[in-house]
Image 1 (cartoon, rainbow, N blue to C red):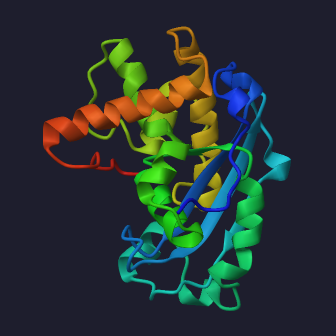
Image 2: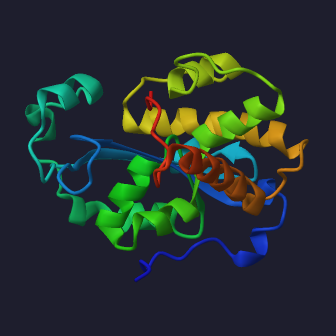
Length: 229
């Protein structure tokens, strides 16, 4: 069953991507398994007509449904004390829905966002991945087109942002990672548009094609995620 979350108008799929709206999304979680882990915060940064709309961004901290782990606290810096009194996820889902509906979703290493969106709103992880433009995969596509060999660590968000010259904000803070992802997307989409990737449909397909190629070579159904920040 598809979740009740209206997507962008279909007419925009084959229009220049700059005419569309995007929502750059980052979840910070207790772990990477949506079946047993939980969201502790999310950040959403809108992108409209090729510009980051920071004034309409949204950041929420959430009382997790699963225990925080020592490892997750080291990563995102949110302690039980910090989340005391925070709302439950179901209480903030209407706000998250409003931030995402009618927009293409951007994420860095999108399997995590797809899995937790599936748990929150329903629908399969595969359905959500088809809705998300994975900016990490766009970075890999851009490097392939330029015959650039990747080095270890090139595809974590912080390194990628520094490499292409966009500001690096606080890693593993949901709002800052969403902002960094949005800015990296704008650089990559502008660059890729000169190589034929001018529409949301082409940007979505580019990432899916690379995922499929790698999955086929590895004999698995998903591309292993790179470090996210």
